[in-house]
Image (cartoon, rainbow, N blue to C red; front, side, top):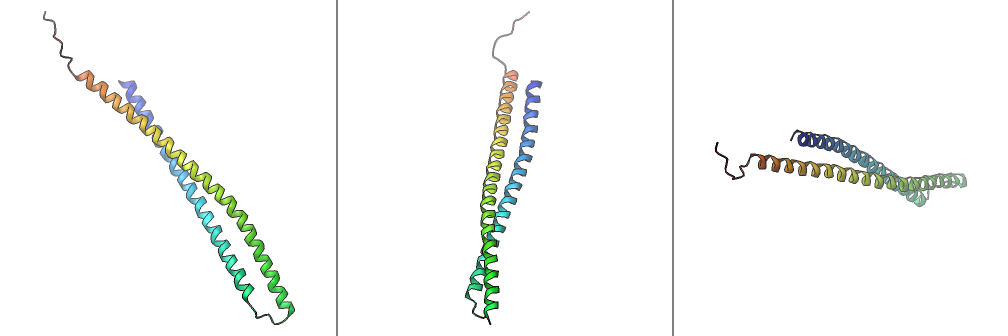
Length: 139
């Protein structure tokens, strides 16, 4: 019986370790999602700036018009780079979400094994304490 109890204790320790790994994976997934959201917001703000500058008609001369055009080209470059960053961030966020799901499955599997072991031990203890109904020999 003590071996069964030791196995259950080991499984509970493993479950706690897997729970910590799950929390870490969830935190990493949350950070990746936050980074993705930041990049998407940056792309939206930069695109809005491009739209605003494209609608401006206040250039006083050709030099001001060229300067506005160069500025908008720079904004287009930022949007392009940000879109590439978004693609990478989305892939990382998806990977972190998969890791979090895997960590949860791993933790749940250990929890299930511990529950099975505890039920098995409880049955053994119950059967050991239950009289069999047989007659005792009289001396």
